[in-house]
Amino acid sequence: MHKIGNISLKNSLILAPMAGGPSTPRLAAAVSNAGGLGSLGCAYESPDQMQRTIQTTKSLTEKPFAVGLFAPLQDPVLNNDQIEKATAALAIYRKELEINTIPSLASPMSIDFDRQFEIILKEAPAAFSFTFGLVPKECILACRSRKIVTIGTATTLDEAQLLIDLGVDAIVAQGVEAGGHRGIFSLTGEDPQIKMLDLVKTLSQTVKTTIIAAGGMMTGQDIRAALNNGAHFAQLGTAFLLCQEAGTSETYRTALLNFKNSKTDLTRAFSGRIARGIENRFLKEMKNKAGSILPFPAQNNFTRDIRNKATQLGKSEFLSLWAGEGVAKIRSLSAKDLVEILWQETSVV
Ligand SMILES: Cc1cc2nc3c(=O)[nH]c(=O)nc-3n(C[C@H](O)[C@H](O)[C@H](O)COP(=O)(O)O)c2cc1C
Image (cartoon, rainbow, N blue to C red):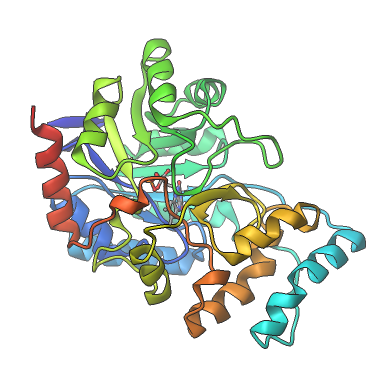
């Protein structure tokens, strides 16, 4: 048995929370039922949606699962110059996609964390995970009193120390290879770009907290390397994107399947925060327009219409195709089979 706080698992695999579509109750439940820890990425869900998502997952599994949110943040204050530049930078895409309106940048730009957190306490999933910094200490204490395991995300040793001071039960050590958003605490700071194995080694030599490796792992061999270097668990996101149970859109699935000669890169272009995705036209062209990108989450709200229309039209060149560096090794399997195969591969000596 593999223990994370008071949770006992058959294997040390964790499904990453994947907000924005890929996370579904079926996917989380399938991973939990197969002996790992399933997760729901609920950051973009309203409290009511979150409650339904969690309750549906409970109806599909009696095993533990985690619910992931973004740490609370304040809306950025934008000036006219920033909005004009961002509007101009995106104009050609709106024209091409025949979008005639410009999205609102009114506050609130994200769903109220306190109301989302109320659902965590009400539904009491086995674990609560978060990224993008720290949550208030009261949240950690409230989780502890309800026996909800808390998991924070770090991309450096300094961030891990802050999470330990906060009192989390486990830390996701997210390497630069990871798909999706980087968990970097600073909204605007440089990416330290530490590789997963280096971060895991540093943390395992320095801290006593449970370490969950994340970033670029697609096979049991990758997972074993992380565990051999001091990680207690491995959290995988990209590996699960083609599972039937995932909510990955058809356009996104096609791009993942056609990845072959492509590459992934880091970008702020879609949301304003650094994230790793498959290099497509939007990601490439926006490299020359770095000064026209709004801070998170304004840019995310400002590009959503483009991403939604592109999904409808099957145009993956405008989508945030979040994927880790290992994406070429992605497999199309059911989540149950994928967990079982990953664990067999991990256990082969
Ligand atoms: C599509 C996608 C969405 C993600 N959304 C979240 C999220 O909502 N919350 C979170 O903590 N991490 C999120 N991540 C990052 C994962 O937690 C994890 O760090 C990453 O998937 C590990 O790298 P890998 O994708 O190479 O396995 C996301 C990753 C992907 C691929």
